[in-house]
View (cartoon, rainbow, N blue to C red):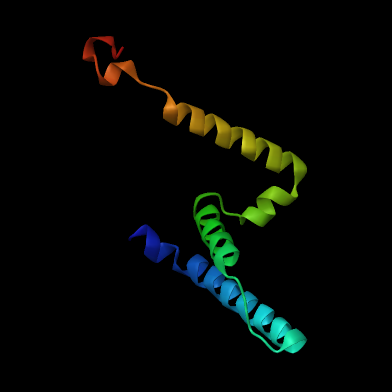
Length: 99
């Protein structure tokens, strides 16, 4: 089965949380000054990050970053991954050195 089909419940929960958050912010701002201006760029980014982290790690970014020790190890692991991605593998270019 396709990964997106298996992850559909996760995606639906996060999108539902996004929509309820936008609705709550819209209701709060409209009661204060009569306008309904809600900036959703941050909310969309948070929703996307939560979907990706739940699909790959099983937890939302908020759950990962609230714990100090988990946050530190997660950030360190992420930095290592980024460093390894940028490393040139000489064996890809010179097959004789691919040992």
